[in-house]
Amino acid sequence: MDNFDRHILALLQHDASIPLKDLAEAVNLSTTPCWKRVKRLQEEGYIRARVALLDQERLGLGLSVFVQIKTQHHDSAWLERFATCVRQFDEVVEFYRMSGEWDYLLRVVVKDIGAYDQFYKRLIGSTEGLVDISSNFAMEQIKYTTELPLPHP
Image 1 (cartoon, rainbow, N blue to C red):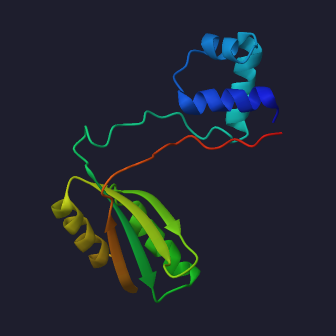
Image 2 (tube, rainbow, N blue to C red):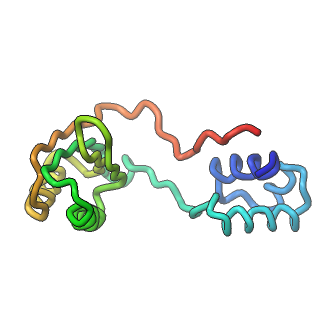
């Protein structure tokens, strides 16, 4: 990956809807070489998808909950069943297997505490082997970005 590629990625992750002509001009390339670079970056997996980022508040999804989970199971078969279960919940927008005190961390987005309580009941009702669940409600979102820091050469 060279400086052209990094510049292209920086611009696309800021605004993926930028017209190819504008993208090419911004990185000092003609449109065809720029398009070929974008295509290669997609094929090589640097660009996984181009999506629209929606406004959580405007959609009435004003509550973010960080859910920490401990389990008594640590085998791969249980993990696969648990992951399959959790992936089915639309409310779960992030899902991590962790090191340290907690085994899993979820970020759950819902309308309000009542909606979270319904989610919580469905989660514990569909998963065996959970030892402890701790829910932390975000009071204010101070920073949120999907833009990754790109490595320098």
